[in-house]
Image 1 (cartoon, rainbow, N blue to C red):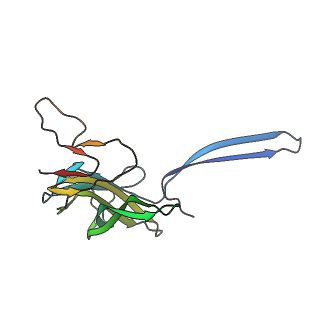
Image 2: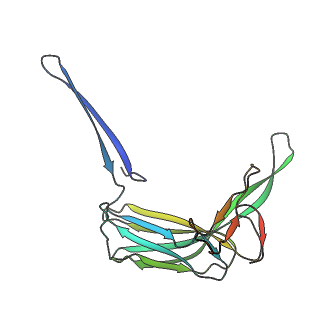
Image 3: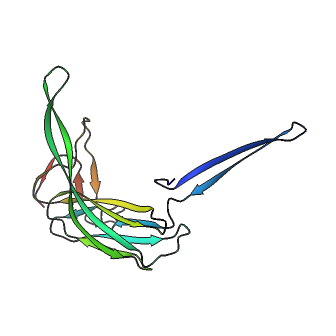
Length: 193
């Protein structure tokens, strides 16, 4: 059988000798789901509508060596949120947010020794997921996904939950004095950027 992700399996055994003494042992084994990995990294966590959004794609062996010549299918998904109503157990209408995911773009590329740039241009503000998928020599699916937020004009919903907390995201982890920061709220928002 196949594992969906890299896993650590613990193996344990015990034998009994003819003199009735027990000998036991235990070990852990790292099991890889395929013979290579796809690494996918957004070059910016926050992008802008009509501006190129770039992700780096690396294909490596479990030992970290680059692997070239592997066909990889790249897919870009756009996720928007829609508010829908439905009756609760008492018949009263309640409103909930439901994600709607649509395939925005797909194309094939071939892996190289150096990480490749995969670029797309978002046309709407919201959340975009990039999915890289390939197969190893045994036919096992090798998949990696990463996401980016995109800011633009008008209304869009980043996602919603039942809490009163507002998630705030920035375009970088670290800033130097004088750097400009892009801050994006994580809930229903109208932006004019």
